[in-house]
Length: 447
Image (cartoon, rainbow, N blue to C red; front, side):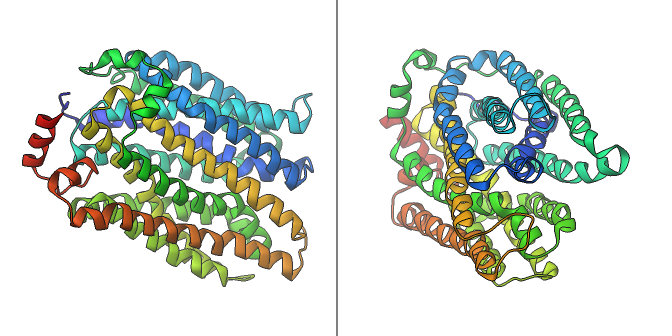
């Protein structure tokens, strides 16, 4: 498969759709549970159970969506247009009252929205993987996509506060939904200019079964998925609980938006750092360093109490810096492995497993964290006992530290340490940037 030169203009046209995607994702994954708990009085345990079912269904269908994307790789635009329409409508209905019962509306709209979100995200992954075989360019593509996505999150965090000053409170999400629709149209129009993907030499493989696609996963990818899944679980737990932590433990509800803004801005600022570190030391090494940065932040979060807003700002900065690596490096590493194994025709299925693990981690985080908080007597938006707040601190900060440490250890023992004692061909298969062109020629001869 030939590599296509990637201009800055083409990169911008590709990445723009990530802005409305992230803009829609923020209310789905962060605002919706708290909105339904406080506005409609839906119990946390009930929301946790609903989120578990929805996100598990959403995660399980990702490999199927990936396989469909493989088969329709040459016709991505119809997928994106249909998914974009469903995403905008479901976000609108999720936050605007209808005659439907709150729990049913929450479940149905969230499922449709997350399914549409998956279709767009996986299509973006397919286009990126089939664009180039150059490892540096794969990092560049992922960094651009995730950087624009973080810009969408920054906008999503800032906009509700701004809209509350400009329009009646009951119309905030109406305007939010309208802006989402406009951004989606703009993103789709830009993506249409680069939607066509190059033909792969093994295009007939696109028509093979999902089981064959799963069987084609190389061992390196399976190990990557293991480390990624644990890392995403560590990130998902604080994401589920951040609003509770800021409002109910720090007593700084008014600063929730600024804290999230700082977190996402730090993620954007960290993108160039991880790009440089991965070029100098290797992608696995850079990602492992990011885990240690996140670990430092969340250890500090455990010791915070009411009013510790400046220290929490430091936590947001450190964890935000690590976020840039979590978003950009795993897709780039997976693309390297897809090309090394000659699995371009299965790129959608491979990328779908990243989405599956990210969503599965959110489902597991919701299923574990919310019921445990409920058992500890924690009630959102009300006065809580010291024991309930301690439970919040442990689940929000200490448990993620354990998972981040485990993920960093897996990266070291499964990829970094073996690569230092293996031949160049092994390093190439595992996506290390330091592999030589001679090893690449050997790999092609042996294929």
